[in-house]
Image 1: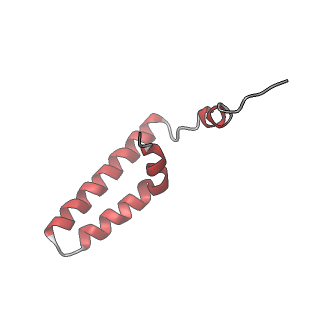
Image 2: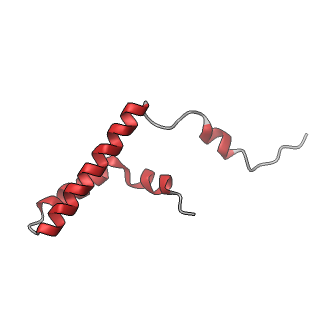
Image 3: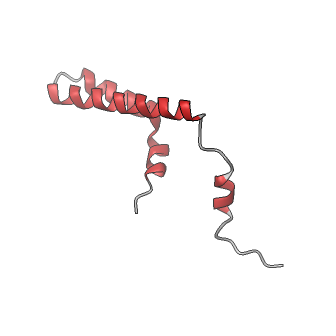
Length: 73
């Protein structure tokens, strides 16, 4: 299954806004609509993360990093 969080972390909200702005200013109606859609999507995701309380750093990354390793004593 595709891990969308990994792809989203690689692109990020800022880059999506920049790509959307570039497409918006390209003088073609189709690219302008796609640019507006990308900007709107990035703004909604940014606001959702901001209202949720920031990033997802609640300690799960540390747990996930060592979840597959077996500890023997």
